[in-house]
Image (tube, rainbow, N blue to C red; front, side):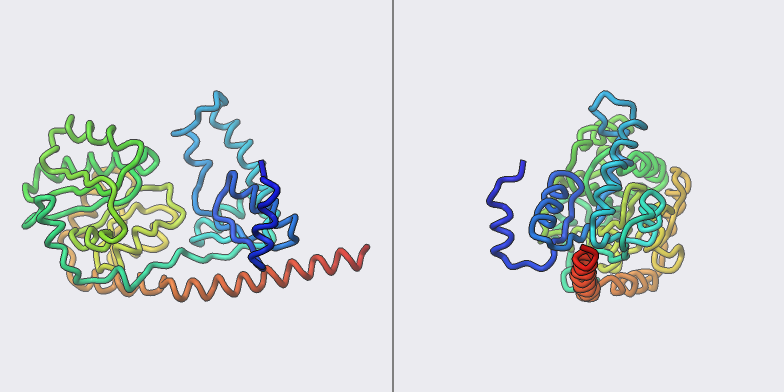
Length: 322
């Protein structure tokens, strides 16, 4: 499972701390190498994996049994980490509810690149490519999967499109549920009003955001939602679900709009976003600036330093007791 030369390869790098971003195979490998080389391991929690069980349970076990087994493993992983990084306060509280014995848990969001994502980019080429020039564009960007709650967006859009002939929905990205939603759009009779772009290259992401009038996210699965910050950095009003991580970033009526988990609420929030003033976009940019990559990197460096120190202190304590 763990090739014998991996410890040697890592040891040759002369690293001081291991930062684990996984929960499965890479997490186990990180812990194995950390224990072998006596190095602290920091774990970032990116995905609420247990909440996706109902969509991807192929084990044959009942969902609740599989979730219980997963938490037994996850608790062990998080307890063994020198520090755990949660992207938002909401996720920190959630993790502590399940694993109150975590040694240390800090909130460090994934920072947004403010030099790549900013207002005023010329998106005319994107609008031309997808036939959206002169239209009002609602953008959904991200992995197209069942846990992203895209049903709500599509059904809500179908209702709004009946009232506004100039409204268009752009669904950017790919994923396992893309075919499902393309069929859904066809069945609703709105194929001519919905654009599926497919995979978007990194260099085009800022232009895709800039091509929209409103960005929306309905996913209650997010631990942070970097797409929210990228859209805000581009000065776009974000219409987000009023739940956990998204609601922590977006302030309703201040720098974006929140909606409850139903289609009517989404429609009202989208209309507010489409009718918003330039001040909302300006405040959205200001909000994104609070999450700059530079500032988040500084916080991570401090956590690395503390993790190294705490690991060494615990080792000294063990040797003294011995």
